[in-house]
Length: 357
Image 1 (spheres, rainbow, N blue to C red):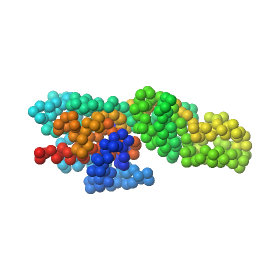
Image 2: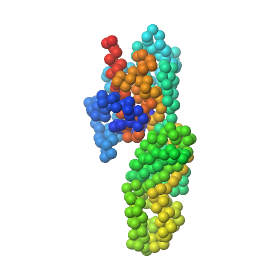
Image 3: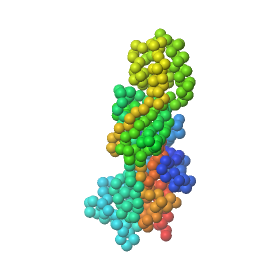
Image 4: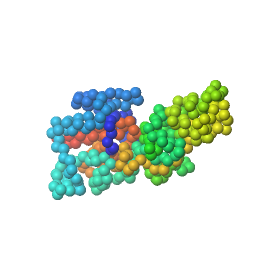
C-alpha cells in the first residue's frame, strides 16, 4: 500500500462487503478508534467523517503499532525474505533467502499485494483472483487541462465509459494534476472500474459535469441573465458560476471566447457549446498513474476459501489470512485500512484461540 502522509478509517468496503458484515460486527471502526486512543494516539474527525491522527502524519500510526507489538513480546524482523513455505510434521517450514529456516505451528499471511504472498497462498491450495491496480489517478492529455495543475473543484460528477455498455459514475472532489486528474472522485471511480479499466488497457472516456449541484435549466437561465446584466464586461474576467477562475478561462477559450470578448457578444450558439463543456465535457483517459503509485490492489485470495469468523484458511489447516492479500478492496477514505484492522484482529484472536487446544 502506498505510503500516505495521513491515515484514516472507514465504514464499509467496496469488494468483499458481504463477507465483512459479520467481521465488522466483532471489530469495527469504533473499536479501532478506541484501540488507538488507548495506545496514546489522539484522533480528530474531519467534516466528511474521515478520522486522522492529530499529527496528520502516518508515522504516528506506524510507531504506535510497532510499540504495541514490542510490548506484546512480538519479534519484528526486517529484510528476512521468504522464499517458500512448506509443511512438515504439522509445522510450517519457512525458508528464508538467507538459508535460515523458521518453524511455526501457525502461519498468518498478511503480505498485502506482494506477488510472493499470492504465490505462497496458491502453493498452499488457495485460488487467486488476478490482482490488478485499484485507487489510481487518470492520465489525461487535453488542452482544456493544460497548465492547470493544482486547481481543485469541491464537487464534480464523473461518468466513466468503456466500450458501448460499461459505465461507472461518481461525485466528489477533483484535483487537476500535471498528468491529468486525481482527487477522491477519481480514486473512487478507479476502484469501481478497476478490473474493467485494466481489461480495456486504461483507455476510456470520461464525462465531467463541473457543476453537478446546479440544474442545467437554471444554469442556462443564469448565463442568459448575466449576458444582459454584464453586457459591457468581459466574459473571462467575470465568471458567474462557482468554479475556479483559471478553469473558467480555459473552458471559455475552448468554446471560442477570447480574453477581450464581452458578454454582449456571447451568442446562443456559444452558450450551447459552453453548457456542453460545463455539464458534459468529454475527456480521453489514456492511462493510469505511474506504476506502484496505486493505493490498493483489486484481487487476491478467494473469499470463499476463508472463514471470516477467525480468518482461518478453509484450504489448509493452521493457516490464516488477513488484509490486502484477500480479494477485498474499498474506495478511498480509509475503507481499506479498516478491512486490514478488522481481519488482522480476527486472525489474531483466531490464532490465539488455538493455543489452548
